[in-house]
Amino acid sequence: MSDDVSILITGAAGFTGQQACRHFQQKGWNVTAVVRETSFVCEGIHVIQCDLTDKKAVDCLIRVEEPTYILHLAGSNSVQSSWENPVKTMEANLLSTIYLLEAVRTSSPSTKIVLVGSALQYNPELKEKPHHPYALSKTVQIQVAIHWGDLFNLDIVLAKPTNLIGPGPSSGICALITNHIVQMEREKKIDGFHIMNLAAKRDFLDVRDAVGAYEKLFLFGERSRTYDIATGKLVTIREVVGELQSLTNVPNFVIDKKVSEVEVVKPTDVSHMRNLGWMPSYSLHQSLTDTLAYFRSQNC
Amino acid sequence: MSDDVSILITGAAGFTGQQACRHFQQKGWNVTAVVRETSFVCEGIHVIQCDLTDKKAVDCLIRVEEPTYILHLAGSNSVQSSWENPVKTMEANLLSTIYLLEAVRTSSPSTKIVLVGSALQYNPELKEKPHHPYALSKTVQIQVAIHWGDLFNLDIVLAKPTNLIGPGPSSGICALITNHIVQMEREKKIDGFHIMNLAAKRDFLDVRDAVGAYEKLFLFGERSRTYDIATGKLVTIREVVGELQSLTNVPNFVIDKKVSEVEVVKPTDVSHMRNLGWMPSYSLHQSLTDTLAYFRSQNC
Image 1 (cartoon, each protein chain N blue to C red):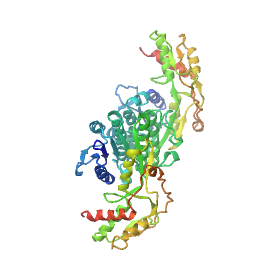
Image 2: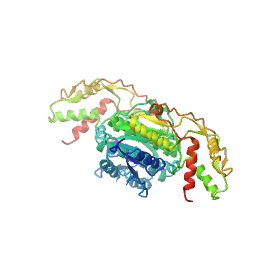
Image 3: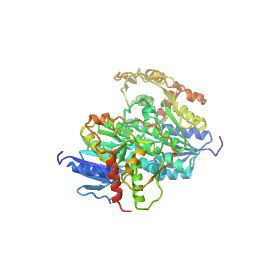
Image 4: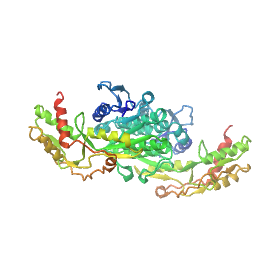
């Protein structure tokens, strides 16, 4: 890729955003990181502070930047916060997306957008219902984006990532357990981390592989199509714990509460991404090793 | 109904809003009319100016009023405007509804809300797609409202009215033809009104009957349920023209352009409203007579 490819990454300070900045910088793309707070710094990357729920600010951002690509990661991804302030979640996930798409339509219509959904969104076509305002916000966000793209002929590709793991500020289950281990290693915690049910199954994908998948979507993704970004393989939380046990001397760092039924989860069909030539490259062991190293490197 | 029943009507200055103000005032309910522009005056009715896309203003409105009922009619209902400014349409229809529902949740959770959708909304469960941003905005508005009601246990009933006709500032096809007749009677127009296809069929319901249906929904409507508000009978535009021809001496006031195919439209199932004891009471002839009288009474 040559120097004239530019990518604007929203939510650049987040778990995926930080990896995306590194990844596309290494590819030689001109990266602009859009962040809400000005404290984010990333060497060699142009950082812009912008509140994406401010329509004028978003218009200005896109008019000035006119990027080749936009990776839209920004938004609120906390289920808990969505119960506390559902309007804020709707504004952060839905309104910001509407403003972004509209700015692209009016100022930079040839920009290709990869919009990142959530494994927690539901399928209205299957009469599914959201379990929390966060799921509602992400589902409506994706739905509006697909139709906005169709109505206004915009180049939008939808990505639906599974549970992402790996080094960085994640709030997912693997990060929580790994961070707990580090706290126990430092003797700041004594009791193990409570797990709802060790038999629960998840599809865990390294965030660096997810970012590689987003790159494929910019290059080859079909407009208006939704791509599942996953390994296609389910592992139990027990297997994750087993891997982590091989990486630490701390014993009994989880306690199985068995308070939840084990949901029947089907493996994700990943053939669409395979057809684009994408395969995950990080093993679960490698991802967890790097996650542990990340938390060990953090102060307090 | 006693004096302590209060109803807040948003979009009160609109076609349905004006009839709703009269209807519920006659029923002895305490009516508060919420309007965007301050120019609206209605005798004996408390009028409040409020921009429903201003979250703080909406919070304040609901905290102060704590109405028994809310009839939410406000929004942008122009397909044309939705192409010109889709963001404004989304804000007017979706954002205002989110702010209203949230204000009810936090300040007046026992308020029962009738939220009025549109015949133009599509059904995501049937994999239908919107033909314009207006349809997208109304569909997402209703979807968010249903789920918001379920998630937060609010008493929301959804109404999906057909094409409403009758006296007042409507922009529907019957109003356009009738107004055109009056302009021809005044010799301000010479040529007839162009009709896409006289054989097209519609379900036309008098706006006063629709308002009566909304009253039934406040009293007996089941929460989270969508009620079709319609006559259940289809008539052709040709039949409407025939009725109007019996009411005016102006000849040839429409010209059939036959430019559009006649869509196959199914009659609406109105059994849910029948079960609540509602029946339309205005004949097509009466509605059109009153519509013509309305436009004849208007200056210019």
